[in-house]
Length: 114
Image (cartoon, rainbow, N blue to C red; front, side, top):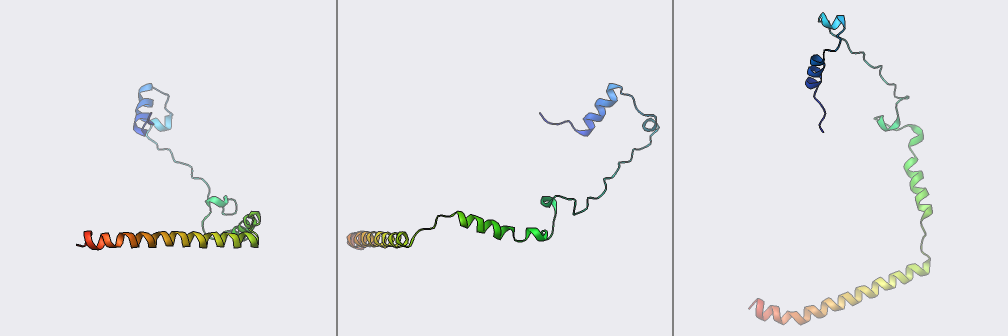
């Protein structure tokens, strides 16, 4: 359900016959009290703009280093084994593509290119 507009609320108050202060009845306007400005040191860090606080400058590096400490790094044997697997997979895929190229070359040359 949509919220009422300001005009609808005013009309509703006017029609309900709510008591109106004497100053408002005389046509005097109310003044809004302005909030005091918030000092940057009191403001929360998420609402501040500009440069971060000095203690926050190394936060990214510290958090990144902490995450890197949690990583389970592979041993030398695991790296060598993974590299060999990748090279063998590349040779197999390369051989397959070369074979497909040689098989379809006459078809493309004679039929498609005519």
